[in-house]
Image (cartoon, rainbow, N blue to C red; front, top):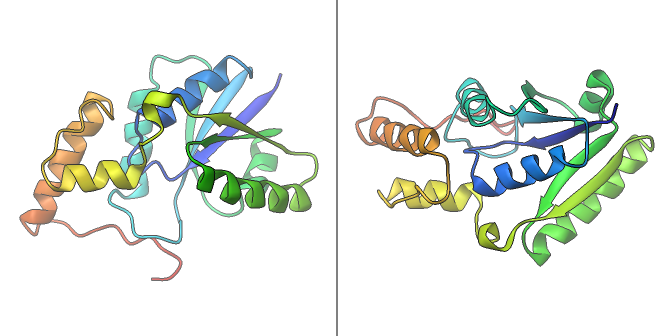
Length: 174
């Protein structure tokens, strides 16, 4: 059995992420969608909320398992017996970043391969930051994210505007 890990912050998950995960299920026996909890950036949603949104997204996908993680991705791969890291490529700048990261991961864990899937053309403009920005300005993101994610975005930005919540700052810099 080949288990693949698809790691990201998923802040929030969007249709580009979903496309990559579902396409990975055609290549691997199991795809473990791993929500990273401590990126070097500020987050809109705390880890538990991001995990919940991802779980709801893939609730009917038997080959997809969702979990949270922290630390080095390759170390987490070893912990969960994943032999492949799946990444998505949208634009040329993604390639440069992913190329360097794949080499660094290979240096740390030569037994773990990295597979990059090219994002479907209709999702090539999508990023979590684009979705967040549009949603923060009350724009319609319904064609970019599942309905439950669009509702969560609307609710979260409403909380932020009302002063009932703050951005989640789960960063190592904080």
